[in-house]
Structures are given as structure tokens and as C-alpha cells.
Image 1 (spheres, helix red, strand yellow):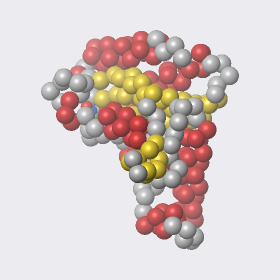
Image 2 (cartoon, protein in one colour; image 1 turned 90 degrees about the horizontal axis):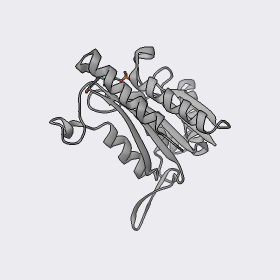
Image 3 (cartoon, protein in one colour; image 1 turned 120 degrees about the horizontal axis):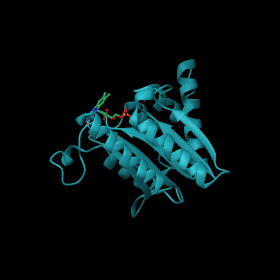
Image 4 (cartoon, protein in one colour; image 1 turned 30 degrees about the vertical axis):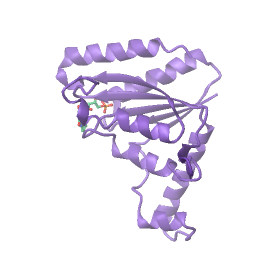
Length: 202
Ligand SMILES: Cc1cc2nc3c(=O)[nH]c(=O)nc-3n(C[C@H](O)[C@H](O)[C@H](O)COP(=O)(O)O)c2cc1C
């Protein structure tokens, strides 16, 4: 069994989503001692934004720029790691109502027609089968269903939608929200999320 662990917070050791994603990984290691973990710190080592040079390379034009060439290889590695993974653990804080840009840059490399999804006469079909995903979600405010700001939530819903589009429908969200509402609110939110992680059984 292989687990792909992605982090995208820029807050280093102060990051809540990193704390939660690490706990989810540790929980899987406890449940499956033989599990292999592959980690990507997307904030420390992000892919470049997609550019015209990338699109040309995807069309078969040889890249003549060493930076682009290295970045294309990074994208290939992202894809290989994704296909090899049985479990995805995605550390995903809310930044400006959505996800951090390094995580979006990762998505821009792995959402590829003909590889991770395809269009059929019946519509789009996800090609990633038999994978589970865990989203370690953290956010300063509260956006859960029923809250006044729920309509502004484009972080978890985007990731769940994207994963579903690619065929990953078994998605568990572990959430710590209201982190900015003071130390007690933060402590309580993290404690709830850690309890949810401890309850993961498979
Ligand atoms: C650049 C940036 C943008 C943020 N945007 C939002 C936001 O739109 N809504 C919100 O509730 N919190 C926002 N926050 C607060 C974070 O979601 C919160 O601090 C969360 O714990 C960050 O996760 P992390 O600790 O793993 O980085 C933002 C934080 C940063 C650093």
C-alpha cells in the first residue's frame, strides 16, 4: 500500500493543516505498518504556473529551456506518484477562500485529459479508480454548511469536486475551522480534528 502525502501551507511548523495531515499519515502508518509514504511539500518546492512553453511541450514541441524541462519532469513525477498511490492525504488550508496556489499548480499537472480523466459520449469520466483521499482542511473563519459564510467556501468543495471529476469519490475531510477566533477556539478546533483522525479505522 502506498500513500501520497501533500502539504501546501506556507506557515511551516505553525501550520494547522500540516499538523493534521501528519497525524492522518501517522494514523495510516499505525493501521498499516507496511505502508509506503511518499511526501511532497508543495509550498517548499512548487511547480511553476502553467505557461505557453508548457502547453507547447505538451503538444510535442521540445523544450529548449532548462527551467521548463526540469519543471516538466517534476510534473511527470507528480503523475507517477499519484497513479502509484492508494491513499492521498492532502494538506489544504483555505487561502483567500480557495486553496494555496502550489496545490493548484499540482492539480494543473495531474488533471490531464486522457490520463486522469476522459471525455466520453456520456460526459467526463474520471480515470483514477480505487483510491481514497483525506483532506486536512484548516481555515481562519467558519464556512461549514449552514454558516453565514458557507457560500464563500471554495476550498473543500473545490477539492472534493476536482477529486470526484478524476474518479476519486471516497473522500474524507478532517477540518479545523475558526482558527482565527482566538487561542481557545483554535485549540478546540484542532482537538476535534485530532479526535476525528484517531477515529479513522481503515
Ligand atoms: C495567505 C492567507 C490567506 C488566508 N485566507 C483566508 C480566507 O480566505 N478565509 C479564512 O477563513 N482564513 C484565511 N486564512 C487563514 C487560514 O485559513 C488559517 O490560518 C489556517 O489555519 C491556515 O492553515 P495553515 O495553518 O495550515 O496554513 C488565510 C491565511 C493566509 C496565510
